[in-house]
Image (cartoon, rainbow, N blue to C red; front, top):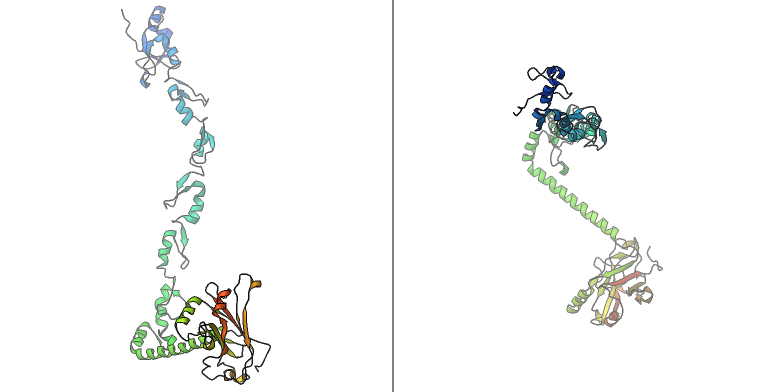
Length: 424
């Protein structure tokens, strides 16, 4: 006859318990009969970890051997932390909960034992945490104080005008309405900026000048008085502005004259640069009497005023075959102090722009003024129309033989000999 399974509870220490009240029972007292014990040991039982999911069932005598391998049975921690851990949970225990495990912090990446890691967590200086001022920023725990003191938008900062504290993100908005913030007078009275709270009193006590004060109007008053004054004084203001414009125009003319005097060459020598030579020569050949004039220059700071004149296609005896060059004496500021007639030696030099200065061959012509010629007498307000010089200075054929024209530019020097001093 088959033996029905008897559900006997056996504790992990090997003691039997009563199935009714779970109290411990001595095995020898329950089964004093060896035959009965043999029958019991052969009965079929479930594993004591049946409720945890173990599906083993077999004779009672095999239970102890099964428990040596049952994955739900608790054994001492393999890392010897002292905990009893079911075999099935041993790997998770060794990895996550064992106090003697070795693990790295996710933030600072340092290695700790399990218990030390639990103490370290929540205190790691590299762990990102939210700012305690609730500004929304997330910073490493070790930088929280620096963030709160220097960068947090919710940190308290004093207003530089009134001294009261506001959060960093609102102090600028406060400055736009702070009663102690300095503001400029809207009437542009010229007074230093005044606190916003004192502006009304300032406007009552200080009169603003008229907008036309730079033109000469001396009126001062409140804004209302200024508006009325401006409306009633249009003609007066127009006259003041017109007079101011005239004075400024005279000043500009004086300044231009001063700049022109400072920019005039007073060395007694002029290097004249004639650019766009080809176009100017073509124009000279197409039109009669095309004359180029140089900038004016002085023989000295208080000397004679001169100007060179050039006909690219020639003039007089050199027309159509030569280039003609002349010197003119212009009315100068110091003519009354100079000796007349003009008696300085004048030379003209056409530069050869050869790439090798040693091989350059310049053309030079000079003359000594004839004191009987009217060209060298003290000039009137209108200078001589032509001057004195060389109608056949350089032939057109000669201009083609050397580098007198280079990059469409020609250079002519006009020089007054300084060795002959005749100025007083």
